[in-house]
Length: 266
Image (cartoon, rainbow, N blue to C red):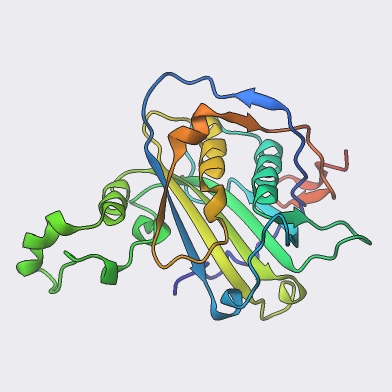
């Protein structure tokens, strides 16, 4: 199983994702069809042993954000602020039973690391990001530089496989949430439990409008073990409302690019 790449797993910025405060902000978009987001979750053996989070049995976490550090970035794209997206991600996680731990009241069992960005086929492995597995592709090439009987099976591919192969040819917006065992997160051998990756083509969109819709659509699949990528309707999320909420941060955070003290307690 392929999870975080070397060097990325431990770049943890000390920003706790805030709670949810219901303040509505409607999507104001021209009418079009975005289709489905692709949601892929890899789970380690240790992660599979965990009880599933739910509203009835919540799991408490400490959240750390890397912000828009995933992928290359697109000059001129309209982006959400780090604070807005962190807070919105926390509200989506809360709906699935993942709640921000509060010192002295609820101790964290997970460290959740959030990052997002603009990913290009020329510089990123989008097939991996979107959850492609050759064993699930009935028409995967069987020999290098040689076409075999698999070419006749291309029309038999699953819808998810077709989507992955199509979306991986062009830039996508990506969101990645990785879960670590909290007690080992700051050791030399952190235990990773699961990682959820969310992808959506960038065409006809901006990051500021796409990211909340992606999180809202993917919510029920975040942290849920799945053998194959899950397709979830992003247009249904767009048709609803987005609760960005009043910003509430549990801690100050440190951004190496700008120095300490940014985003102090509200």
